[in-house]
Amino acid sequence: MTAKLIDGKAFAATVREKVAGHVARLKEDHGITPGLAVVLVGEDPASQVYVRSKGKQTVEVGMNSYEHKLEADTSEADLLALIDKLNKDDSVHGILVQLPLPGHLNEDLVINSIAPEKDVDGFHISNVGLLGTGQKSMVPCTPLGCLMMLRDYHGSLSGMNAVVVGRSNIVGKPMANLLLKDSCTVTIAHSRTKDIEAVCKQADIVVAAVGRPEMITGDWIKPGATVIDVGINRIDAPEKGEGKTRLVGDCHFDSCAEVAGAITPVPGGVGPMTIACLLANTVTACCRANNLNEPEGLTA
Image (tube, rainbow, N blue to C red; front, side, top):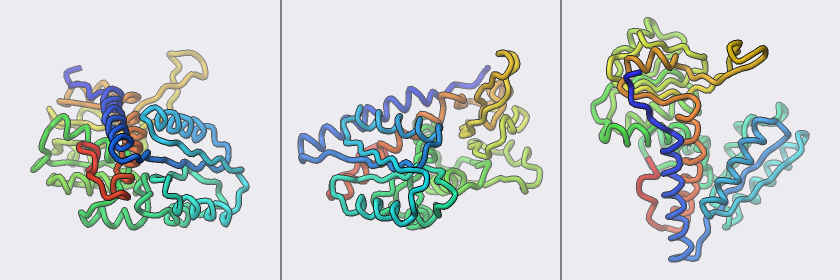
């Protein structure tokens, strides 16, 4: 391996430390405690793990955590009523509805019922539009985490060629908009992109967010490029024993690491940054709600 490892776990710890410091100052100087409300509908095991982790980390940085666990058959009207109540609650600065939702609930309707200024996931259509036009918005957590790591490693991103592999509303599109805002030349590649390998090979920055395990290999990477692997895929690992699995990214780590200048691992790369940036967004939302200066280094 020749690439420098970008340690997302360590970087996320630094972000949480900054958040905790800002929370302490908000309490001491203004008597304000940021509050994050997380709504979980149903009993999806992965979602339960995420919600527990979010609640734990919220409390650890000194913020108030409000968890609302609803039955899987909760009606859309009841869920919207809860969100309306949280929208009007001044002690709640951030609202997150854990996805995916049960099939009978309209995810777009639910997400767009959250007050945009409390939409710490950055999924509300108003925030999507603001980000796309380069205005102040709540930024989706995973792309924000990727941007923070890129800025930390490179300093200025101005003039760099960036390829985002994947065009999802959650990662691909907002990531491209953030890179454009930082003056990169941006290409979004996807399943219909012709000669996608050659497109990636010209990039100074490759952000892989396509959801296909180990799709991107070292021969796709320009020597010295920075690779940010957003993918989290579980594949069979017979070398560990029958029925065992392991986590891999969208990049074939070993071959990419031989060529890249820097790379994020999976696990331990982008993943830890997502919750850290959720906490950062909650502090930002709290500061905006109270007309206070936003925390430096925690926004886009």
